[in-house]
Length: 190
Image (tube, rainbow, N blue to C red):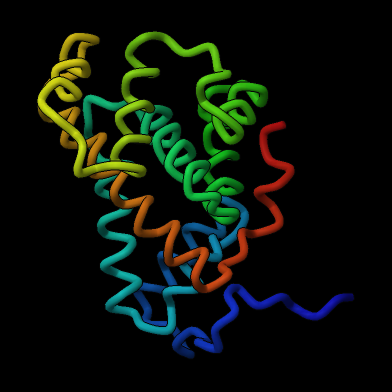
């Protein structure tokens, strides 16, 4: 049996024991996902930071939105592809494969969303997310109008921008700390 791999390159062990609410959350993850995602374990050295991270993540990725869960995961993967974030490409690539039921689509978006068979709405959404990632200061009203023209409303545009921005932040933290995805993600939904 090999020694347990570190979640990040930093020596920041989780609080031990975890507070009851945190342990309950981790138990739910284990039950539903078959694992506690390493991103949660990485944040568990500081419960306030973990709670802030999970609160924002859950709001952006799971709460009500004009964007489907799949579309939000597609944004996560597109941003992570631009940023070359190993953790998020692995974890959210698995989510795209699961939610779409299409392992080829998941891999296409991981590599280059332009190669994927997307409708005009999805392509515009991912183009905008890419522009948020590469050149957010260059976004103009024409970019927002293009999203409106393919069916997004202003709330949807807010959500696209926020999901893209969230993953730009998390990609940078994951890369800077050498955060490693759970091995389970690699084989999921293929």
